[in-house]
Image 1 (cartoon, rainbow, N blue to C red):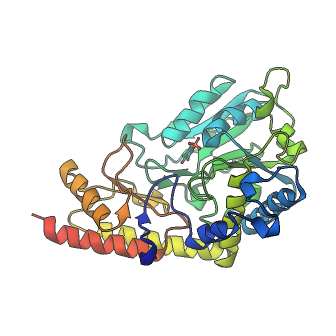
Image 2: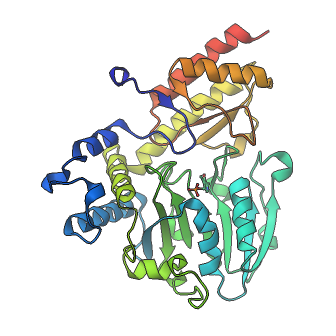
Image 3: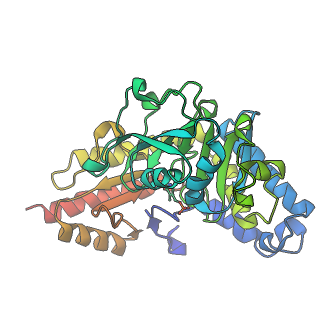
Length: 367
Ligand SMILES: *Cc1c(COP(=O)(O)O)cnc(C)c1O
């Protein structure tokens, strides 16, 4: 790694990618598998490209265990466009939906959905700067809701739903924004009606958004009013090729899925992620200088928040870490402090280097 002058990049997104994936893309750059052209230059209608998207879908289905009655869509528009597509497609009977607001992204999703139907915000942790995941009594769920919406991992605020707390919504389809934790942990896809994720956190470069949708939820968009490209069924019926898909982003995501397989699958990746998170949070919990502002039981394995309590000292930490090759550790502008994003592609060595530096910094700066 060092001979390439690569840093440990703790960015929340776009974020670090595995070196073998980047090297594979480099190898393919000028001449993909003897085609005489790069993937960027290929027609999306070509046989060569069809093989790339087919392999990406097959590998995603394999690593995530996606049942046959779910469609996989490769779309554009980022996670944000799903804030509109979800209500435009899933409001279909009562035009009511339940939302749990656990951070800025869930808040924006709820606000957008209000344009199209009745949004019941069952709970919000906004009053405590989203430092925990509110637990809601199922008696308060809307029984005839068209869907129930959560943001699985809160990128800005460092909280993540734990499996045991996931809402048990019965016949109401559970919708999850997994933009920042997809493929970081084992998930039972059959518990969800729809899962979506923008790629640039855990799946590759920005540009492609993955939607996994149960087939019975397709076909409810009002096609007389819904902008044509915002109808899931159109994309499902056309294999994500109604118009030009984000071809290069899909290719890169496909390389990421193959890399996850080569690492032993999501189960093995999850073990590494848990070990990284444990090392990091143990260090913070044993520190006299650093604190984690997030409720212990809701801490994210992907985005770890920490503070010294002194904004000047935080700045000094971020600057000195950068000088040592650990970059993008400043917290989101709405939160401050520090944030270490430890997505799948962040190796254990990166977190080891970070906690070693935290201890040195503490020894040098604790008064
Ligand atoms: C980054 C992010 C988004 C927004 O993604 P864009 O691709 O920028 O639209 C939505 N939800 C979550 C959880 C995110 O982390």
